[in-house]
Image (cartoon, rainbow, N blue to C red; front, side):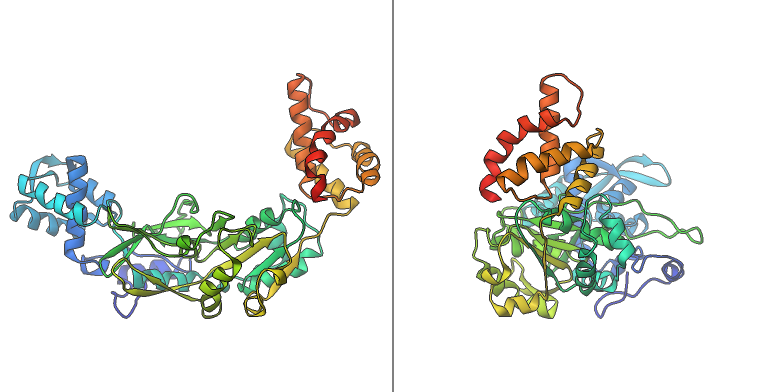
Length: 443
């Protein structure tokens, strides 16, 4: 673990491994209970609560579940036995034993569970988490044109847009994507994180002031396989998980509560806010301006973090903690940014990029792209027929979502009639009647 003012330095055995790795950050396993940065009572509570759930487990099984090395727990097991909290139930492989709680241990486990119901990987100290974010910040990355093209390879992007997006992404300062609905702003935002490519390490949970805050969230964090260096094979601190740089996406459901540490008073467990879960990645505020809260509320909440790159959160104990605010924030909206927020906020989001309607050439490219994804043949004359007989006469605006939606409706039409999927003018003549009756008001 990287050194901090309050935590132990990187262990000597891990220095060589860190130097020989491509990763800029590598959480090395602790060699002693002190190096975990946790109190012995917290580790004891995790052991007792786990045994209270499973009934019986070997020392190594317990260590695996709480993600701490077996070697540093052996002394703790001996102490728990001497205090009559756990006892042996038999021998286990590799000079290990199976343990279970005594009657006194069950009472102690119940007391621990009542104080905090958290069971699982041991948390990492907040100070270690702060160091990890600073070491893996997205602002240290500098994607180039070829990386953008690779990230956007599965969608159709106006080549001129790269010159606007590139500097905005490299700045890490945040951006507005605005324009008419249906032009792929949300899809584009999701692809931006892929420009950075690199995976990051996050802890399952962090602890400060004896309060555990869960960080890892399966809804936003995708674990990746750990590739071992050909020069050295190093172990990592199992409390940390290697994930793809996250893209946390929220829309109209966003409320102010989601931007603060959410505490469950019954279990005394806390959940990290969205901006903390998106650290070292992207945070997409989709349909900005249509949330349950006014844009001004978000402005007041984030105006300082956006500039200082630090956020202040409140633990359940009332203690204020300072955490990094290190992500690329993307606001996607169908409205003009200047109509949503004031000049002070716009200054802190320096890039405003309009996503325009596709021209005819792009429209054909979109149909070609989606035809391939639907496993059917692209036919230029059919798309020309669609433009000449439906878009121009009715003065419909082309949108980037139309190709996907219309081919999807043709597929449904063909499936209903049990005929092969094929792009035919007569099929499109049928499906556009219902499709544009709904969306014409948006054109």
